[in-house]
Image 1: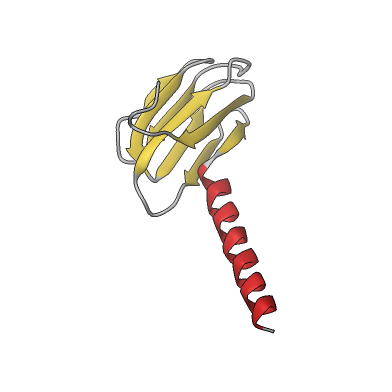
Image 2: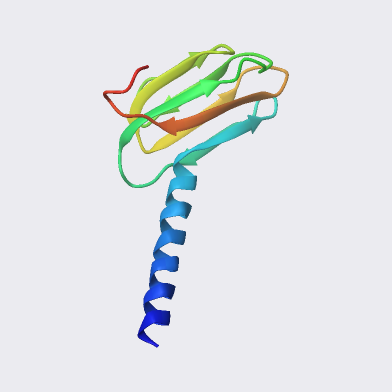
Length: 107
């Protein structure tokens, strides 16, 4: 019985870690003029937001409480925060990705 309880505890913990990691990384697709807010968690971290090369045009990306970044297709921005606010400034669909980065990683 102790083995089963221990195994169940480990599986629950692993599921929690996977769920937490899944919310820190992701992609977005914004219809024309759409606004989306993505909450990463309660911990500030260095986040990177990229506008995909195939997007219809620029997006406005605000990370944390910093100044907004106007990102043309293919460009990325890094800033500290726990929330990402995205706004599609085009008449077509804009797509991209977001993820945390390490301060000592290659940018």
